[in-house]
Length: 217
Image (cartoon, rainbow, N blue to C red; front, side):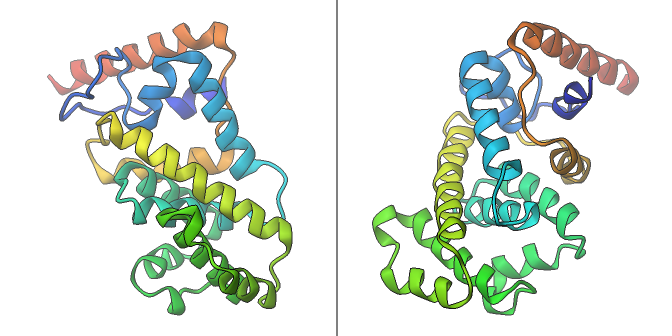
């Protein structure tokens, strides 16, 4: 089952999440499998936003998720979605690098720069989105659906970021783990396995963690 391999990321716990989940995974994955019904809803929302129908490419949508997560200082979401964006864009990470340091120099279209500015306004507050920013995006060729999807992705990732950091979830032991994680996210997406398989997937996660501990000793 491919979805199982997507969720099974081995890591060593550095600190404890604020609540006891008994799910040995970093970041949001721990929370998604802690509570199946909400995990399924949140996973399927992410899949729809980032892999569902949209005039924006997969890479552009992952770039919005990465950018908003960076503004919210959510390391897990920023690093994982940056890795996915890098995989889609195949640009050696230059777009992600420049949206963090100098958006105007980022190797993306004028339309994308305008949409990222809107996403940045959403990150502050929905009321911070200006008519001028919307009109600039339109002048750069953005459609109403482009603008809609940008605002929705930005708003949703503010929620995801605060969910991850508000419960103090763990980070992967090494940053290098984000690369295969991003590749799986890019290739498979974010769909949740059927709820009746949830306990089996958690069992697999625990088995992988025990195996890792044995190999390390």
